[in-house]
Each structure stands twice: as structure tokens, then as C-alpha cells.
Length: 293
Image (cartoon, rainbow, N blue to C red; front, side, top):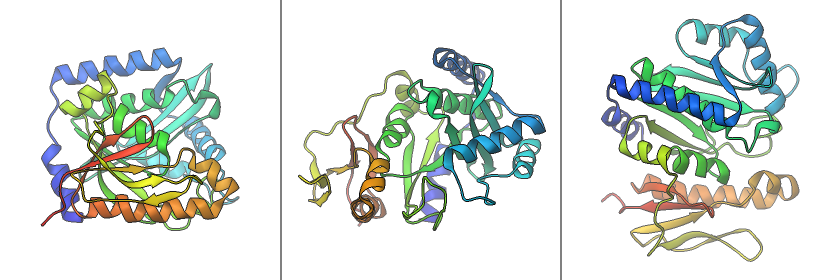
């Protein structure tokens, strides 16, 4: 899988032109203005201290085990990585941190206050990050997300046009913050080719992939649980639960069944060489192609 990852990244890196850089900056500025926020790099110790505290408030890690430290943020920022804050109403309401990687920029963590959710602040952050990267000659951004969180799947794959390249089972191991505690940390690794036609189209109009003629590889049963289906068609649908975070709170065993089924079906299809074409508004991964060999 590591070789496949490298091939994907190398094939899609390219140099952005001046028009790409200017257009990305204009789009980022307009998106932030529409969301009523400002996104800016953090430069002072005070700002970075506030960002660390904000991320801890969002994820709520165990005492004495901060999500990210001031010293790390300072080092990342000083040596050229991405450390930014989201400001609304004169206060910091979000933060995003990325570090330089072999294939571009890896966006490690991003979070906004609950009060900003639904205002497209997350979209503003990603477009600021895109403009930042292109202005520095970086054509690729990667990140990971939990494949069971359907709103993130739709945002990442359909609204942004990122492409899943690997299914990473229990990638971070056990985590003890309130968001991830008690669940294995499976993640989808995505690559965002910043000036590709796919991304340009997604940023213009979020168009979910076609799902016609598909077989259901993983569906939703009458009890809301996962139901295994067929994977023998050229186009396969894989369901995500409607609200996995709420499900974890009320029925951890059911959430674990979704984790296992998604790892088996989505992870299995990707390992076999299938392509994740995108994610529909009503909660389905659309998988296309044939198995390798």
C-alpha cells in the first residue's frame, strides 16, 4: 500500500500558475467573508497558546495530555508549516495545523467551536489552506478522517473533491479524548490535488457521484445497523451511519458493528484496487472499478 500511496501522490503533483494562485486566494477570501470569519496564520506565542487551549476544548483530552503543545506549534510555524486560526467576532473560534510532508502538506488537525458549525467556517479554512499551499508551490494536501462520520465524508469527497487513497485500520491506536475514546481509530487517507479538474468542479458545484446501476455492498438494516450485501458489481454502494457520534453515546456495541463492517467492506474494496468515486448527499460511498488481477 505504501507504494500505491507514493504513485498517487507523485502522479498528481504539479506546479500552479500565477492565475491559479490568485484565483485560490480570491476564492478563499470570498468564502471566509461569506462565513463571517477571518482565517489567518498564527505568529505570536499568545495566539498559539490560545489555539492549543481551543483544540483541547473541542476534543477534551485527559488532563495532562494536551492534543497539541505550544512548543510544537511554534516549531511548525517557524520552519514553514501551516498554523492558522479562525476568528469570528474578535475572538479565535477555530484552528488548523498542517506539516510539510514528502508529497506536499499534511493537514493534521482542524477544529472550530460548535457555535460556528453550519456557517461553512470549515470550508473557509480548507480554502485558506489551499491558497496558502499554492502560493508556496505546493500542489497537494493530504489528511485523514473517520469514514463513519458521514458529514465529513460528504464535505471532503464531494464539496472539496479530495480522493481517498488508503483505508487505515486503527491508525492512531487507542485515543483517550472524549471524541475518540472507546472506539478504534480507523481513518481514510485522502489526497487533495489542488488544481485538478475534479477539485475545480467540486469547488464550483458540489456534485455527488452517480449511483445508478450500483449494487449495495453495505446497507442499513431495519434496526439501523449495518447489513452486508454484494460487492460483485462495477459500482458498489457502501452506507455510512447517519450520526455515528450520537450512536456511540447510546449504543457503543452498534457503533462497533459499523466500524467492523465498514473496515471489511470499504477497506476491502479499496485494498482490492477499487476507487472511491465520492459520497452522496444521502450517505453512501460510491465505489467504482474492478478488483486488481
